[in-house]
Image (cartoon, rainbow, N blue to C red):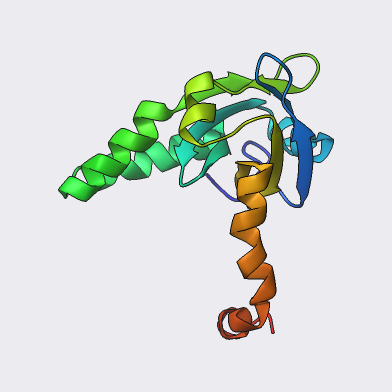
Length: 158
């Protein structure tokens, strides 16, 4: 994919929002995330289990990730385990007319997602966290942000 091309515009997810899943486990995708998906011309997402959260990838980015996994092959038992976990739990979701996706019950259970969630943009994908798990995960990062100054300096951002 050529970054920013007209055929495959880059899909960017920025910011964070809080939501409540409905009784069926549907998530109303934030307007800014929906607009990003629409701008690339494909409103489908691939949701996969991750460490304590669900990752949601636009389908074109997911297909690139799958191609990279195929190119690497199954080099080690750990790679096989990772592929099994990611691909075995992957589900394609299309936005409905109200801009919602149905989060599969198995993914919600595997990732500890209850009713209140946080959707957190990660530039090329976004994460879906249980609100309480997000708070526990994010609090130490916020409290120790000064420890990341070296990382920011290495990136030329500080």
